[in-house]
Image (cartoon, rainbow, N blue to C red; front, side, top):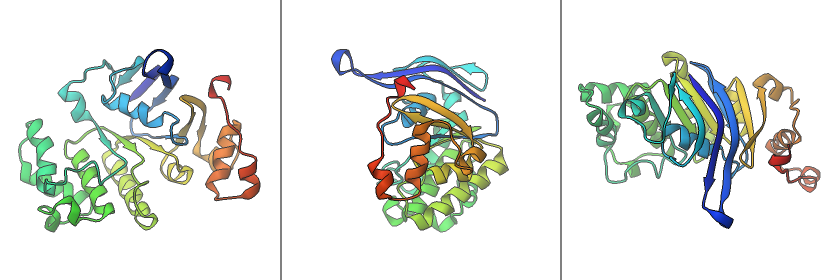
Amino acid sequence: MIRVRDLDVTFGRGRRAVKAVQGVSFEVAAGEVFGIVGESGSGKSTVLNVLCGLNRWWSGTAIIDGEPQVQQRSRAFHKKVQMVFQDPYGSLHPRHTVDRILSEPVAIHGLGKTETRIMQALEEVGLGPTFRFRYPHQLSGGQRQRVAVARALILEPRILLLDEPTSALDVSVQAEVLNLLTGLQRRRNLTYILVSHNLAVVAHMCRRIAVMNRGIIVEELGVETLRRQAPEHPYTRQLLSASRGYDREAADNIEEFDASLS
């Protein structure tokens, strides 16, 4: 479903140029949940922005559902590929009701049956009709993220790009949203790319994982390898150690890895 080869993204020019993504390559099969993990600034969200068409300043090859992608995407592409952003507080218009938030993509793509689609989308994400005319400030964080998922699903896409979809939520709500996403993926046979800095979240949902450090994929591994705590690259082992919680000895031994030398 998704094939990326030698993806490069550079921000700025001259001395101020920053190579955010360097030579990234991976493939995602139809119906697969693929994870990209790494610390903040590793380039994982930049990869998603390229795939969904938000970032047009890139080079390399990106093929989605058999179609080579260019910098400018078509309307049909955006119906097929949707993104759920990290911050449910910032991704919903504060002055729009849930009804308007969900009806706009239907109108833009001329799908029709707006009311039916809205009611089905709300039901699918576990929100009833009472939420339809509420504003974002009247919703909890978890409810806002459910609305964001409903907005993405209302176009009936084949691919969802998930950029840290639970990191802005309370721990008690994170599991609910992850279970919702897992159920939707199975019912609709969706293809997911899930970006996270949380190894536990990625291991919960993904079969294969790419580990990024300073713009480069340093390792790709199966989730079983991660659960056995047997990654090959020292950076991945360091991430795994950090995910267990604070440890004085581990903190004292943290290394800075130059991904370009890996």
